Length: 184
Ligand code: HEC
Image 1 (cartoon, rainbow, N blue to C red):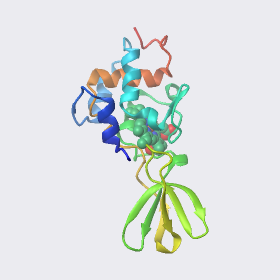
Image 2: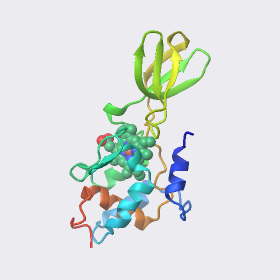
Image 3: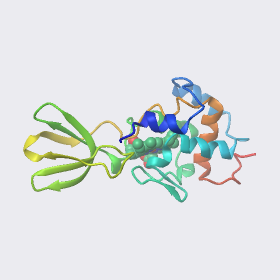
Image 4: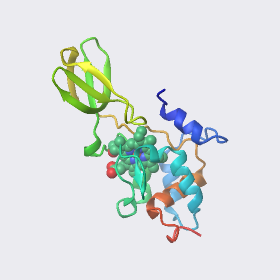
């Protein structure tokens, strides 16, 4: 059974419900006054609840389908981090650009090419399940090229409250360090 990002999220967030369709500006303004006094445990819980571990390595845990986020503190301001999370397709990390395949019958697929050779193209189209494979015959393919849509789903913050998002940002930017100045 292939779980959609929404299912994974819903399972992890049992007890929580949709909060709102966050705008970048709202959260960015909240973060701009500083991330001091945040809660490490809640941040870590949000990282799991948001499904981030499914695709990202952080510290010694997590998947490898997306970039390792451990060093984020040295790379992003809170605003830039929020933008990466909320608009994953705006700037797709070049090492993780999926391939978009259009078939002659009009169907389309997007995923990571795991095998290209002989007369088949084999893709992983579900990053939540790295073992999932979709295979198509080369002679069914109309065109293939880099996708403009990130494999990372948008809207992952929409089941979090503002305070929870702030704890998540502090957690990511701390690099999993409970002693970081962000935490009380
Ligand atoms: C289904 C897999 C998946 C999930 C779930 C996911 N991501 Fe991603 N994420 C990716 C992939 C793949 C990329 C690289 C492509 C891109 O830049 O959009 C990425 C990129 C990023 C980047 C930019 C990193 C860089 O080096 O460019 C950040 C920051 C990020 N994700 C944070 C998160 C956070 C925080 C969560 C949880 C709330 C999350 N992601 C959930 C797959 C995922």
